Length: 324
Image (cartoon, rainbow, N blue to C red; front, top):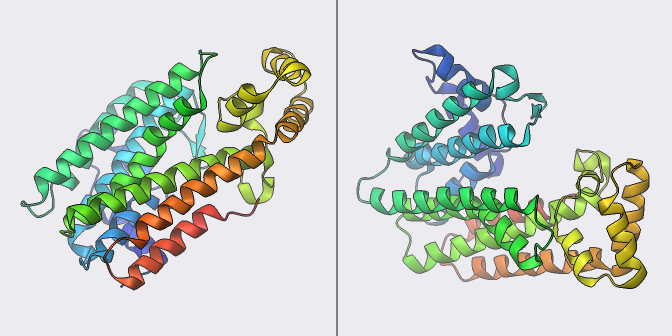
């Protein structure tokens, strides 16, 4: 059985060996550029880890695992256009290095490439694999739509936010795991359990990401603290604060959210004080820990290789215990 690091190396080696460039080069060069930027390869690794859990040789499903990674990177190309992002993984985004039209068309081609890789699996499992892939892909689009709508809405609820991150973030992690289970011929019960494991880990991970953006350590978190507060991003913390704030706290929170001209550090400190006073930071920790515990419970019910279970649990623990 391969460990996490070995699986990451396997995925990277396979991506490096792909013969992507063909005519017209202008279509395929941005794809090669995007895939060469690396990353943790979390989604294909989860797919392969799930296959090992059910005694499948990972080399037999490496291309379907790559399909998940190619699809994920396709969504990033289009997300970067919508967000007008300049940088991705410390490199210029595709629409900045080339232009928006190149990013849109190359992204479309990546989506098709993902299906080509997905189809390189046992024909008996292909219909179920495609159905899962379609449902996950559509869910990611639904999550992105909700995320865009939330930017202009002032009545977003905590439950709506949780549904958005379930679709935008958690569903692809869950789908990656279930794909590995399906291709390893796991039982329906176990395939559903590994999916629920992924959903709960994904929700916990995103809530932790929100928490660390406000309360994390900048050096270990890897980006400047307080970006979500400055941008008035509707996170679990902000929405919970709106829900619980009354009187002076409500006035102060509205003041900082509505204020157009402000000092960023002053706003970050003021809003964090409101969060702490309302204890939404503690509420966030309780919520993410609750999802994590649900994930662990799902994993414990699965009938699979114990070593693979331990590796999945270790992987999940590392995701959830980043230094803050």
